Length: 183
Image (cartoon, rainbow, N blue to C red; front, side):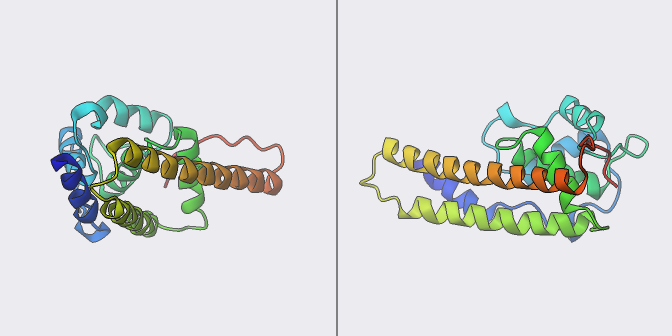
C-alpha cells in the first residue's frame, strides 16, 4: 500500500513546471533528457525519454527541429506533452491535436499553459478517486475501477479526435493531413 500512497501523493503534488519556469536558455540533448525526468510522473526507466525518441519525434514533425543541437523552452513544452500523452495517443493523433491547438497563431506558451491546467485537473481527479477507494476495496477492484475510467476516457478522446478529423476533412476536402513542423 505504500506505493499506492506514494502514487496518490505524487498525483496531488508533482506537476510540470509552468511556462515561465521552463529554462529560458537552450539545452543540449543530455540536459533535455535529464530535465524531462523531472517534468513527468515516472516510476521506472521503462518510460524514460531517450535521444532516439526525441530524434524520431523531430523527424516525424511532432517536435520542431533543434536550433543548432540546442533545445528551447518550446521544445521542452512539446516533449512534456508528448511524454504524458504517448501512453494514450498515437503520434498521428498527437500531431493532429498539436496542430489544432496551435492554429490561428496561438502560441506554444498558451497551448502549454492550457495543457498543464488540464493535466492538473486530471491528476487531481485521479488522486481524489484513489482517496475514495477505501482500504476495504480489493486491489483488483480498484485496478478494474481505474482501468474502466481509463477506458471511458479513451473512448471519449477517440471520438473527439475523430470529430476533429471529420471537421478538417469537411473544411479541406481531399487534402492530405500530413504532419508538419510546428512553429
